[in-house]
Length: 137
Ligand code: SF4
Ligand code: SF4
Image (cartoon, rainbow, N blue to C red; front, side):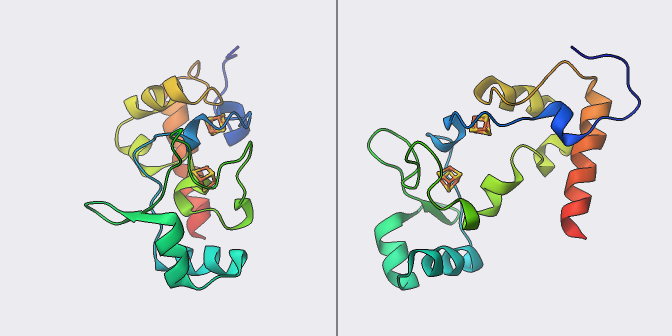
């Protein structure tokens, strides 16, 4: 439970339980050129073959394909490309959308059991902002 604090840390508000729910049917995991190159190298295949086998184009870019069960093509009881997983996966749940609108934190928590919602919005927002800032250093 939340006890009054002036500052909170990422591990206070988020601890991944590896359930994989965020790897299923969640609007698409975008991959940019650098990520395609990194994942292709990790899989030891050409980038063109990687995009043909494992990606799909949607209206705004390239996303990882999903299996028939809705899970990301790289989910197999855990992320099978963890060392090179896309920024979107690495960044979760400390993302700009939360800083722009803190209500997104609670919306995200509905599908992510690792997110805690019992901290004041202001503390969560500043914690998320710090993680984003540190990532840029
Ligand atoms: S839904 Fe949340 S708790 Fe589950 S694997 Fe994804 S980040 Fe971790
Ligand atoms: S790349 Fe890994 S972490 Fe990202 S959605 Fe796919 S299985 Fe999940």
